[in-house]
Amino acid sequence: MVDGGADGAVDGVVDGVVTGGPAAPRPVALDVDTGVDDALALLFAVASPLVDLRLVTCVGGNADLDAVTANTTAVLAVAGSDVPVHRGHAHPLSGPRPPAEAWHGVDGLMGCRPEVAARPVRPEHAVEALAGLAVALADAGDPLTLVPLGPQTTVAAMLTGDPAAAGRLRLVHLMGGSGVGGNVTAAAEFNVHHDPEAAAAVVSSGVPVAMYGLEVFEHVRLPRADIDALRAEQHPALRLAGELCHASAARSGTDDACLGDAGAVVALVRPDLVRTEVRDVAVETGDGPARGATVVDRRRGGRDRLWHGHPVTVHEEIDGPAVAAVWLATLRDHYHSASTGGGAAPPVHFT
Ligand SMILES: [Ca+2]
Image 1: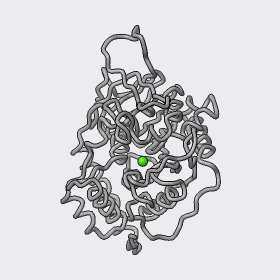
Image 2: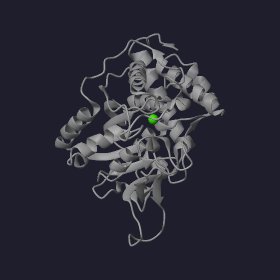
Image 3: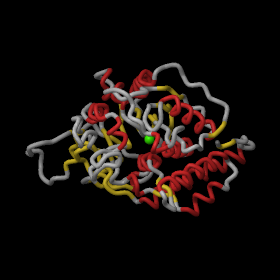
Image 4: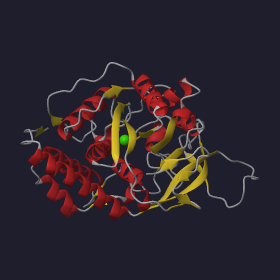
């Protein structure tokens, strides 16, 4: 597991190169804006023996908060998970939520939301739930790793609301940012562009931050044969994964499907499949064309330069085929045993 140290470096990393293999499970909270690829990440997090999933929080992003919450609870129900789910912020810190329906459809899941009985959402706000869990785990000596897969709004609110909060987290391992150009704009990646002020607050909070951004995001892809095989599976979680990948591939006009956020969770527990470097990073919060850009300093040399941001562990390279294979094998291992050992999988209709 990518493991943050007090100085912003990562345990198991020597000169920026991850040397460790699969890690022991550690407590994790996912903050999601589900989202096709958030759903693929949730299915993996539930399935992986290397993820001790304690909490899922929802934030407005790929869809509005109501749709995100409905998607998240539906995916977790199909996955057979009863992990607590809490609602967080609906809008960015700076104002209204920019429309994002062009990316994942009006429902956020490209029309693939499973029709299952609604699971209740816990009444406590996500910020309070995350803060409470962070305190409990820090007191127990096994601090929380927080994995934001959407805009960092809720995470920023937690970190800025309590000056001691950053010291209670092991790591914020976020999907977002880019030092190689943007996707939603020429300069900015979607999650950071959605709420640049929140991303800036997280990066400057003092908590160890790992950034899984566009350097690696598109490189984890599921081949067509695996997509079709998943769609033919019996367990609804596997079929859902296949339908989501099929819809994602159709949207992008490709034969294979980008696993997106799911790759970030695999990278968390399989740091041997990525190469990271500690870089100075700053977030552009101005209103110009670079709003939401993450400026990644790749200059050589020490810190006697004209500018430096905050140290962040940046994912620079990834073994995409291996990460996709781990994702797929983990889902199959878990959900095959779930459907044979835990009784028949419930019938699920995909809209
Ligand atoms: Ca997401």
